[in-house]
Amino acid sequence: MQGLSPSDVIKPEVREQTAYTLKHFKADVKLDQNENPYELPDSLKREVVDRVLARPWGRYPEFVPAATTAALAKFTGWNPEGILVGNGSNELIQAALAVTLGPGRTVVIPQPTFTLYKLMSKTLQARIVEVPLNSRDFTFDVPKLVEAARSADVTVICSPNNPTGTLLEQDALVEVLKNAKGLVLLDEAYHEFSGQSAFPLLATHPNLVVLRTFSKAMSMAGLRFGYMMAHPEIAREVHKAKLPYNVNIFTLAAAELVIERQQVLTAAIQTLIHERDRVMDELRRRPLVTAFNSSANYILIRTAQPARAIFDALYAQGVLVRDVSSYPMLDRALRVTIGRPDENDKFLAALDRSLDQVLETK
Image 1 (cartoon, rainbow, N blue to C red):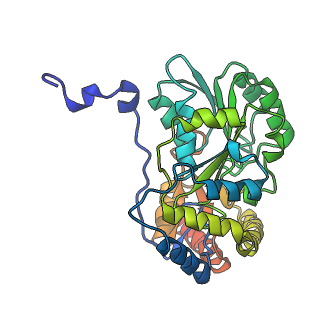
Image 2 (cartoon, one colour):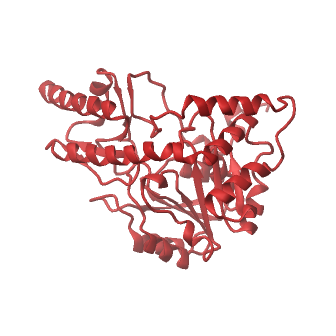
Image 3 (spheres, rainbow, N blue to C red):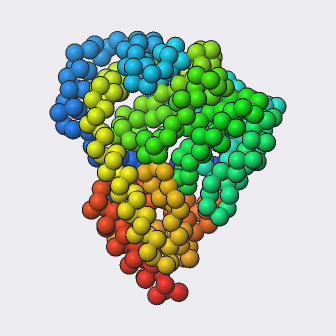
């Protein structure tokens, strides 16, 4: 490296990007990362520990975790040959992009959306075509999305979309799938809150890849687990870019048990949906706030004041939300995760005080 700085050996596509990062804040009311505020029961956690204690820790897990894959196949109804598991769904998104993108290849990404898709694609030196959401309500611009997908090697769609909460309707997704040149990666991280899934389309659309996570509705964000469903031939190719032994024995045991006892999460998910609708109604009563329709476990809001000022005023009261005002089209916007009823009430009260406080200081 004589005569070179360390950064000179890094691809310019990487150097010009800002790393995906999130500053850690401590707060009494944490509504910034779209997590499920309802913990798994202690009895279930202890059962996970017992299962892990019964296994050797000095040995690798199975190269292909057959028990977990079989449990997911039964849970979803999909062919186990078309299922891959990962250390969070982000790992599987990365693997799917790694086997499809590179110099001279094109990816379509709606905007605004989860920033990791663009970061990964840039790192792979792909050409990125961005399709803006409709600015009035952040719904998907379906005609433009379909047109862009016609010449793309990969089209990445998050539905419900993060951070807007908007859903790509099933008939619109079918139009994209029918016209797409390449794969359509559908990130369903929040599908449990939407009442919709693309799963029924998998059997008839071999270019569809569905990605899911246990970090949201399934209350396992701290353990990092996700899975992918695709045509078996696609899954076999994506598997080549996945790291070996990528999911540890603790996470595998927890995932299998949560699949077995999925009913323990049903009430919490329904409560969060009810709370989302209640908080939405409350926000729409506030003339200084615009709240956008959401099919996820969070709500995007916009105020007349700078987002950072409202963020700081909320945080001073112990309420942590996500400032997303740096995203395309989201000036003065915040994303608020739905918490427990008492947490949501604290947020609403803190928001009212924050709006008053910011107005008084102007």
